[in-house]
Amino acid sequence: MERTEIEAMRQISLADFLARRGHEPVRRSGNELWYCAPYRNERTPSFRVNVAKELWYDFGLGKGGDIFTLAGEFVRSEDFMEQVKFIAETANMPMPVPEVSKTTFLPKRSEPAFEGVETAPLLHSPLTDYLAERGIPYGIASLYCCRLNYGVRGKRYFAVGFPNVAGGYEIRSRFFKGCVPPKDVSLVKTEGSPSDVCSVFEGFMDFLSAVTLGLETGGCLVLNSVSNVEKAMRYLDGYGRIDCYLDRDEAGRRTLEMLKGHYEERVCDRSALYDGCKDLNDYLQLTTKKEQ
View 1 (cartoon, helix red, strand yellow):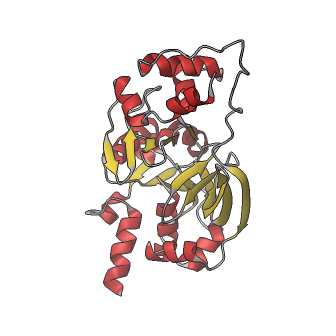
View 2 (view 1 turned 60 degrees about the horizontal axis):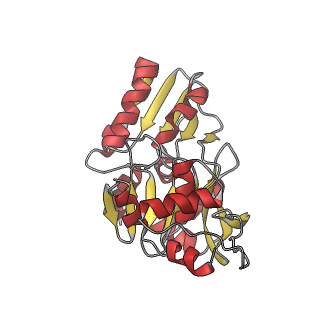
């Protein structure tokens, strides 16, 4: 295949590509389009497309890439020619045919979305300034988070890293929200707290907010995505009380009902504390502004 043929496919708009497959975004935020994952069943959108960079990321799977890796998820294959065929059929393009007389060009195997991942202590930096703007003091952030240095397509970046039980990291910065796979829940044990109580949070910003507000009790479990509820249950089974600090939106309510359906009276909804706010971090920020 000619390099120009591959580049032509790489320039196809991911939004147009998904629209041709019958998938429309649920919402838009700046350069980001959010979808329900188009190749698996989900009700809460966790699939993001960056329209400026033409890259996608599935927070539920902890995977991402370009149009070729996206086609691979649809066809369930890492075979490059299968991906090319799928893209050509979807975009109504002629199927490129390898020419015997010319050197066949195949791209390198898809590299991980994150390259050269390195961890370092979270020292005072623009990252901690960003956390401070969200109400998280440095003393608390440095206890539970690290600085994560990583590369994407040959460029180096850094972000706040929060580890999960599978060895992956949730990462945040002022400009990026993502996950270094594998995707999983995070567990934090707090010393001197009741051993039969577990506090559940949707994201680690909410967990850090709870610590800042002095709300965390017993063990703490961070879902890192509402799609991780089933993974969380194997850790929650042994607790006599489960305090839920989930988002006050449809996804948070569905997650709460799922936990109540499984654990019944053991589940306590603590979201009334931040009534009027989307989540615990919004409440912390509002409280901090009032105090200032």
